[in-house]
View 1 (cartoon, rainbow, N blue to C red):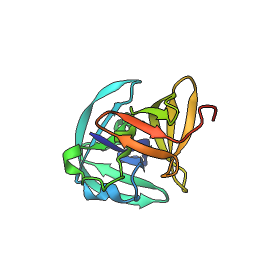
View 2: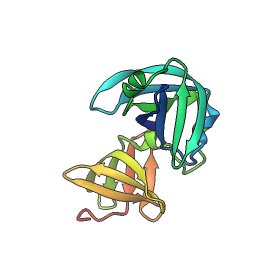
View 3: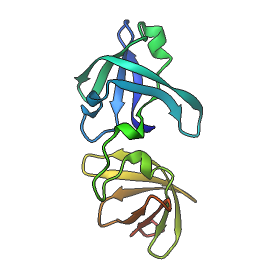
View 4: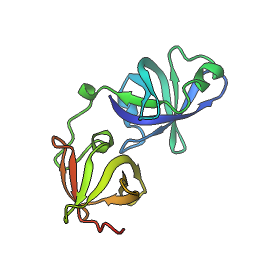
Length: 167
C-alpha cells in the first residue's frame, strides 16, 4: 500500500469525509475508483479496508469524498486520522530520481562524513520543496532538494545527504 493522504474529519451528516491528500497534484486520487483506508505508522496498525468511491470533489485545499458504505456522520467519524492508500501495483512507476514519499519513510540517513543522522519518519511539503523529517539522536528537518540529497538507494534503504550533523 502507498499512502496517498489522510482523513482529517467527517464532513456533513451523510458520511462524507474530508481528506488531506499527500499527492503532487490535489486531484491525483481522482484516478482511482477504490481507496483503501487504514493506519500503519508504528502507533497502531489497523487492517486496510477497501471502499468504492461514489463522489469526490475539491474543496479549498482538501478533497471531499463519499465512499460506498459510509453513510452517516458517526460512521465517518470512526475513520478520522486513517490513511488513504492505493495498492502499489496500481500506481505508475516513478521517473528517475522521483520517489513516492512512502518509499522514503524508513530510509537510514547518513551525511558525507558517514555520520548517522537517523531514519526518515515523515515527509511534508512546504510549497518551495519537500522536507524530510529525520529522527536519530534528535529530530532534523532536511530539505529534499538535489543540492542536499546526493543519493537515494531504495534497495539498501539508505540515503546520503550533504548536511552538517550540527544542523
